[in-house]
Amino acid sequence: MTRTFVGCCGFPTGRKKYYTLFNVVELQETFYNPPDIEKLAKLRQEAPEGFIFTLKAWQAITHPTDSPTWKKSKFKPRED
Image 1 (spheres, rainbow, N blue to C red):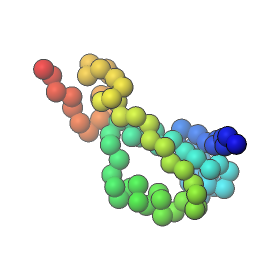
Image 2 (image 1 turned 45 degrees about the vertical axis):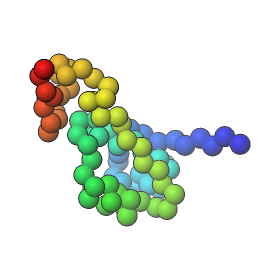
Image 3 (image 1 turned 135 degrees about the horizontal axis):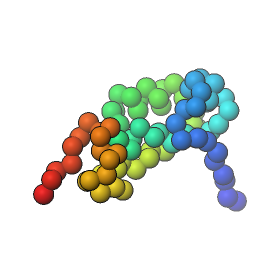
Image 4 (image 1 turned 180 degrees about the horizontal axis):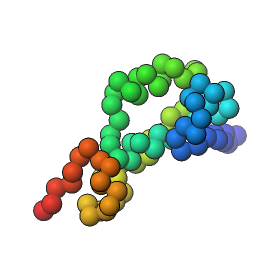
């Protein structure tokens, strides 16, 4: 049997309420910067058992280094 999970990209409402409405969320801030372990641990601790987190792929994987999206990153791409 196939299971379907429904959620949003990011938290459009407070996390406590969101956890009661959905069973998955895509963490969109991971697009700009790799996540801090401490932040991920906090999210896991506050979420209900079985809640699923997905990570938006980091722009270093998906976008060229001259993309304007790099302006929001803590990391600057190398210019070779």
